[in-house]
Image (cartoon, rainbow, N blue to C red; front, side, top):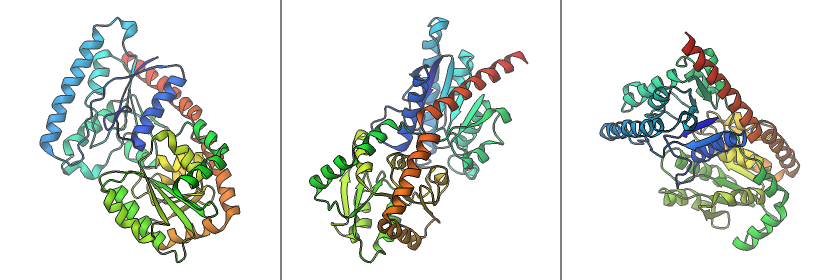
Length: 388
C-alpha cells in the first residue's frame, strides 16, 4: 500500500533528536518492513509551544497552503501513483494536523492517526482553537491508534465509533540493542578508558534532553534524590544537551564530578553501546507520556528506576523489570537506587525480564502486526462509509 506519513510536531527528518522523532522513524520503519511504500508527505511543523494566537494563525494559514500544494501535486499523478492512505503521527493541541484531513478527503483515502492526545483542560486556554481542530481530526479518522491507556480514555468519546480506536504499544527495533548487550564487556571497557571511570563501581545512566519544563524537572528531582545517598559508590553517566544545560549542571553538580559524568549529546547510533555499558537506568520521568529512553534501556538489559507518571507503567513493569516510584518521592527514589546498586542478583533478574518484555511486547514485528491490523480496519471503515 502507498502510504503518506506526516508528523506535525516533529518530522522524522528533524535535526533535533527526541523520543517523538524516534517513534515517528520507527513507525515508518515498521510499515516499510511490512512491505508498504511509505512517503514522508511533508516536513511542515505546526508546533506552537508558547500558546501565541498570532503564531497559531500563521501556522494555520501555512498549513492550508501546504495541504493545497499536496492535493494539487498528487492529483496530477496517475491514480496508481497517488497515496492510498494517510497516517498522521502525534497530533495534539500544540501541534494540530492541518494537512491530513483535507488531503485525505480530496484524494478520498482513509485517514489514520497514531498517538493523538486530547487535553480537555485546554478548551478555554490559549490553545482552544488548536484543540477544537484536533478533536475534529480525531473524529474524522477511520482509525485512531492510542499508545497508552491514559490517551485511550481521553480519545474514546471523540472517535467515530468503537471500532475506530485501537492500541499501538510503544516499540523499538531490538536488533542494535541485542548487539550492544552481547558486546557489553567491550563497551564498558572502552567507556571506562575514555572517561576514567572505575569499572568496579555501579554505573547509573540517564538520557534526556536538557530543556525547560518537564525534562528539567526530572533532572532536578534526580539530583535531589541521588544527593540523599550518603556514600554514593557509583558513577552517574548523563547523556543529553539543550538550552537548560547550565541548569541541569547546577542540579547535578552537588553530587561531585566523580559521581556525575556529563557525556553531552550523543549520536543515536551510540546509545545502545552506552546503555549496555551501564548497570542501571535512572530517570524520574516527570509527566512522560511513556518514555522512549526507558524502553531502549530495557531493550539493552538495563533495569530501571523511574517515576510512575502517566504511561510509564506501560513500558516498565514494577518489581519485574525495574522499580517505579510514586511521583515526587525523592526518598523512595534514592532507596530504590541504593537497593539495586547493592543487589547484583536482583539487577540480573530485572535485566533478563526487561529484555524478555521488550522482545515479546515492544518490538518491530509486534508493531508491524498492530499497524497492519489498523490499516486493514481503516480501509474497511472507509469503504463502509462509502456504502452508506
